[in-house]
Image (cartoon, rainbow, N blue to C red; front, side, top):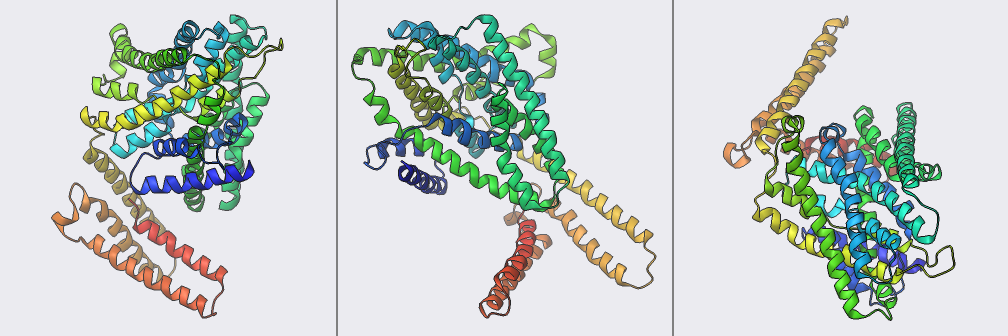
Length: 530
């Protein structure tokens, strides 16, 4: 099994690299590749371990998403995000549970609700990736990102309650409410506590490597501790990540550069591995269906799949337009979205590996020793929903976005806002330089020569954004800033080549070379910033 998992990991990263090169949806390509690879002897018996997903794959993905999220944007859209991340998973749980109970004879009502909770949370990774590539409006991206941060907590808590009832543990409505409350309060408390603690520790360090290492380990520790106190590990990780994401601006530049590169790689590895695992589960799912009539499988699959899609569409449209009609406050605070934008959000309901992990975690027997009611059928329906939504929405969402002409925010307005902020920042830097020179009591001309260089550098940065605002190089030709950048990049390339030659000649060591190249890399990163 270890060799098989290693093969899956390597293959998934290679396929993700190919998909990125050809600008293809990596999640969709990996699921299809996993379906095909499941026929290979080496990969035929690869099983999805639910603890691997919930304790190894999920926490760092949530951590990365939380760090990249905007705390201000989430608060601004708290009502719609809450409806998507809390209300919609619960509505899906009950709707799918009812349909499954009516169409699958083996399922009890508790087992059917367990299925509903399993398929309730959409995995917005692929949806946000498509939206980012096609330039969806910022508010839609905020809604999808905010939903993906919190819907797992809602669905997994509902899953615990329904599963407890299905296996024979006493469960009442009061205990269900208590479980939800404990998960929410415990998760928020753990997240705030760990977030503040980690922020304090990192603020006292001046070691980017250690700071990044703490950030790499943190999501696993936070998730585990929150679950130990019966809180929501998902909420805890998200809350802590939001706190640290807001404070990352106060970290050192080296820490930010290192964290960005580190988490880009970690997310690519984990997402690729997870989606490949989804496709590889096909043989196990099919092998457990012996004895179930094909007609029952087909009818229940169509009914559950249609319910999952239909509930999301109805819910999103209902709560996009009804609350503003009933509340003047909502109408005044939130601009009305277009039907096209609402449909895009409703159509971005792809399920992911969390659903399959939850299904795999359903026990084989209940407390009474009897087989869990309808478990093979439950896992099969989960697989149908996950793969079906990935294929349907993954293939059609880009087409829907283009046909409905859902365009992103005005790029000129966004660029103008950025340029104005840069203008103020550069002028503030210039004023600070003047203050420092005025305070200087040195009599030689070294400060003035240094000040002249700094003023020239500041002026170049001040002019850089304004020169390109709304115009491209073909229209204005090569600006002075562009010429400076081109020439300086050539100089950096020459320096880099010389340093490498010095190392090859034995004049400097590899450690000295890496230190010198790091300085050049940081300057090149500044020159190449978008």
